[in-house]
Image 1 (cartoon, rainbow, N blue to C red):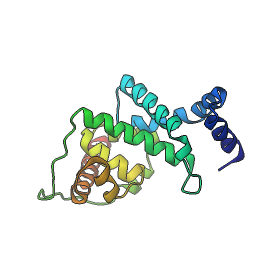
Image 2 (image 1 turned 60 degrees about the vertical axis):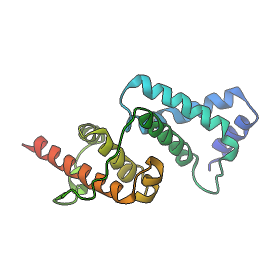
Image 3 (image 1 turned 135 degrees about the vertical axis):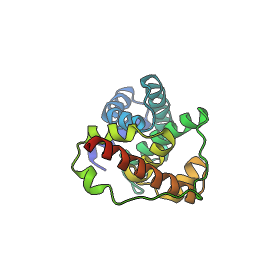
Image 4 (image 1 turned 90 degrees about the vertical axis):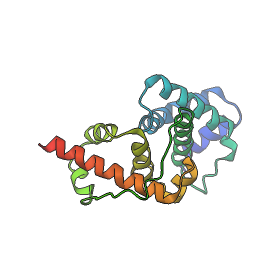
Length: 178
């Protein structure tokens, strides 16, 4: 962790308001976009960000730089807050293990040719349940086991939703190309 961030975190732990503001300013944009991958309504994003920062400051003493970067730790809090919001909205995941899903290939070469805004627009077109799994796995780097624990589904359901999400994105790309 860089010295400036270390100094800011230590000052935050001593309840230094200006340090808290500085940490907020350093983190808010990154956390905003992390939450926005899961929740689209600006009002809810702002509420989730507020809850995220409350938890960050409340539990800052539990952050351990030896276990990982502050950005990873704070992103995890933001993503969990977004998922909590979605659970409250009664987003239900149904096991898809028995559905036939034919996925025609790897999206990486196609996505590599697109800019970030095009990819986000594409992902936003798929239903929320699939988008959540896609974001958690492909963008945020969680394993299927971690996803299953976070949103209370089986690992095979996570895999099925990811496969289905990729198929939907692949179909959207097909529509975009035509």
